[in-house]
Length: 225
Image (cartoon, rainbow, N blue to C red; front, side):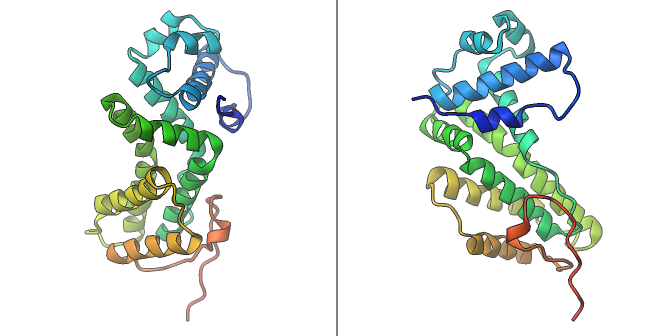
């Protein structure tokens, strides 16, 4: 039975205002690609079917995306960018936790689980590996930006190992949620983030409780002791 993807479709809807013809095409194609990827997988995803579901000509798709891999990569990047914010809470720990918490929420939704299983099942295909890596790139980009902002604010030293931090946290997320399907508990997630931040030389300034993450709002500063 095809996987239901209503949540993903709702996320792709514009916030307000009329869509241009180009925007309507992009929205329709993006929805169709995500639905087909979740229901039939990458190998069986057909551009003809995507065009039919999106209500456009196949030539319209190929004018914009030359290959199926480019099309799927674009659709997943679009889906991810719509769902994962770049938080500015004023504290690097809070920013990192918001990014990871929202990423986990997306993975655990029906659409996210379906796509993750497809990518894992077809991982021997070089195109699938490339598409899967692209889907993780935005999360890693958000993490890099959070750490760079932390360096700018003086919470992290200029020599902080940004790339190893991003690779370690992104890799742990992929292993636990995609490969093993063994979610981290809130305590494990907090301990992992704190462990990596200590290694990066983090100097705490504010503290955002795990229960209030995912909004990206600015928390109150901790009282000095």
